[in-house]
Image 1 (cartoon, protein in one colour):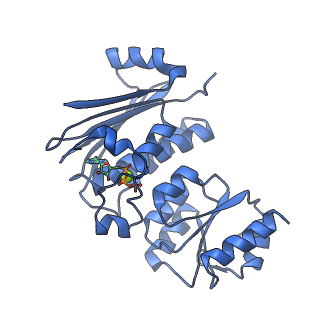
Image 2 (tube, rainbow over the protein chains, first blue to last red):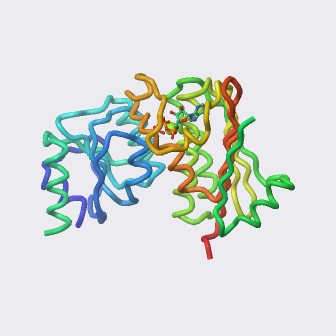
Length: 111
Length: 166
Ligand SMILES: Nc1ncnc2c1ncn2[C@@H]1O[C@H](COP(=O)(O)OP(=O)(O)OP(=O)(O)O)[C@@H](O)[C@H]1O
Ligand SMILES: [Mg+2]
């Protein structure tokens, strides 16, 4: 499944600069606890969260997360978005809840 | 001083001789970490990761190093009054040391238990405090050594080999 299919399915908006979204997504992980994400999320997955702190970018970068999506209308500060742009991390936002985003993602991966 | 050691069996022999001899590293990277500095926390781990990437360290091994290092770096800023981080790079492995300014751990074994955390409100607001950092470190490293006691400084160091377990 390609990132762009996911973006369409959850009606996501780019927070970081819009880039090519042909990359393959292998799965997803939903959590707001950073150590939980580092221990259990896999490389190339989409991370669904409402945690908006700068540390999210650090974790996504260190753990090679494909893209971070902020659910439930949550949006991080400009400083976080700037840092993500510098580190080459994709940040997305959607109005859907974490439950809905995870459900749509699961459907796309397991049609 | 209370001490904790974990060795991955596959590298135990080689690793033990390292800790007896403590040879000179090829590259040394030093960093200072401030207390509760959640803005800069992660920079040291990120720089060590980049340096090792340039040296050609395997992608999956790099990820293990980055995760273990970040967890230890956050603990140094979240649970201690900051301290130092030293990355010692060798041809076959890396040893990263986190030496903080205290207040130490009451019981290292208890700190290692998944879910155990003394993180306060401020630390939890940052997304930490699941009590999974030390277990994550152990899961990703080949050797883990912690030296700590209540009221003292904590030394946490780990070793990760650049080649995969055979
Ligand atoms: N450098 C340190 N100095 C003093 N105590 C520490 C240190 N590192 C860890 N601890 C103690 O060990 C506990 C467990 O640490 P661990 O990293 O596993 O979880 P956490 O930091 O509380 O939460 P998480 O890492 O999941 O965000 C901490 O809550 C703290 O009590
Ligand atoms: Mg921790």
